[in-house]
Image (tube, rainbow, N blue to C red; front, side):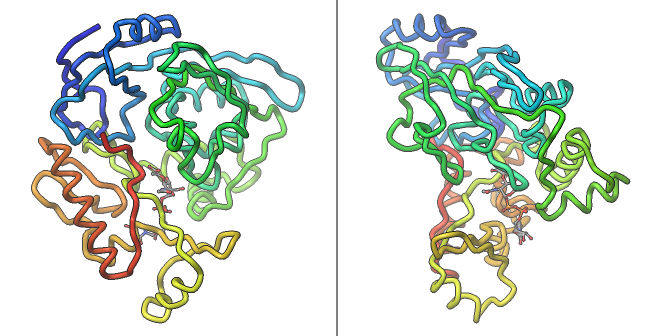
Length: 336
Ligand code: EPU
């Protein structure tokens, strides 16, 4: 266990917070040993790519999940059941699947973070969500130290949401995740906006394979989203709000160009990036932070920003979107 450790290398926002006590865990037993220290509260850190530290010191025990390993548990002609350790880097896992000709996660290429963090917010991009390929997971209960199994229904996945962001928040460390992936007969999903165009630019219009789709997604993401190694960020800072159809109709008369996606149940999803851009924040720098010039939904740390500073910017953006559109944005990243 380490003490007063700088978290700078452990969060993609590049914030220099410290962990009071820090335990890197490579197995379930490592987690149980760390829990036996009795230090509380306990927090679990994955890839640190969806977290904003607002305090200089994270109190208690921070467990860094570094459980590795990827293997095929079962397979037949049509599909394979694959298990990955919670500490595996998500994109490395995606590439492993593509190398092994296993389909289903290619649209989720280049999402920062770890396998264990992926179910927490049901990561999603380009028309696919983790829940579409999810089978089950194992997690260590941080109160009892016991390992518990969760199937898909128990995880209660929603848009950037699961039981691990609701009533089970902070209770578990996800140690292993199992995925049902396709073999040979893949369900290629290129319906989302830019994928088709990017494949065309790559000269791959005829029956693109999973490696082509992955490559297209990598190109799109790299062109729009800042690389955390260069500019600190956590991807989308806010969720895309879902508003009642009536509210959308009222707004549409004032803003006929507002992009929108009707959802089942009479709700309409509106892109937060567009709302933030309309409020004049896109590309605007405030001290060491700002809203990214190519994607307003991404808040960035130009270097030396504090978590408090990023949080103050987030609150200012929430205020202006609320007063211009009457819509309350909610953070997508975890605020600690
Ligand atoms: N838009 C603007 N201005 C902006 C940004 C976006 O007008 O500054 C408009 C775009 O023109 C487009 C719409 O907003 O009409 C949607 O934009 P985009 O396709 O870039 O996706 P997004 O809704 O902003 C979501 C996810 C991303 C994911 C992309 C692609 C959320 C909160 N974000 O972003 O996820 O990569 O779709 O599927 O759902 C993340 O969660 O960290 C993340 C990056």
